[in-house]
Length: 255
Ligand code: PGA
Image (tube, rainbow, N blue to C red):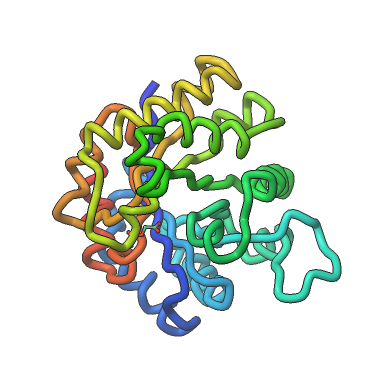
C-alpha cells in the first residue's frame, strides 16, 4: 500500500504571528498543486498558531497545521503549558512530540513522550514522534538499538490503529542544524528498523502504514536523495522550512 509522503516544517522559535501568516500565504502559492500527492504541514510556535490557522481556513489552503509540543494533562495548574484541547481549538492536526531539543533543553524523557503521545491521540490529533541518536551513540555503533528503544517507549500502550497512524521522524541529533547528514542509505536502514519495531508492536499492517520521516539538515539540494529511499516517507524540516521557496522545493521533491 502506498504511503502518502509528508513534508512537515518545524519553525522552532522563529516567526511572529504576522510573519507566520505571511510565510504560510507565500507557501501556498508554491504548493497549491501538491496536495493530492504530498501532505504539507507547518508547525509554527504557539503564538503564531492562531494567525496561521486563520489564513489556512480563510484562504482554504491545503496545508496541515501542527504544534511543536504540548502538555499531557487535559488541563490544570501548569504555568506556561499548553493543553491538547487548546490546540484542537486552533484546528491543529498534528503535534510534534519528543523533539531532541525538548529532550535536551526541557527535560523531556521517554516517559513524558509516551504520555504526550497518548494525550495527542485522545484529543483526536496525530503525534509526530521524534527519535534519533546522539553522536556518542552513533560512534559506539548503537544507533539502531537506541532508536528502537526510543520508539518502543514512545508508542507503548497504543492500539494497533494508532500505531499505524502515528508519524515517526528519525532525526539524528548530530544532523540537526549542522549541515551534516547520514547517507540516505544509512538513514533508510534506521527507518526500516523503526518500521520493523512498529511491526513487532502492532503487526505487519501497521508497519506498512506508518509514515517514517527523515529530519536533520534537509535542504532542497539533498531532499530527493532521502525521498527515493523505500522506507523514508518524507521529511521534518527545520531551517529550510523558514523560507517558502526552499520549503516548497523540498515538498516538490517528495512528489
Ligand atoms: P534542521 O532541523 O532541518 O534545521 O536540521 C530539523 C529539525 O530539528 O526538525
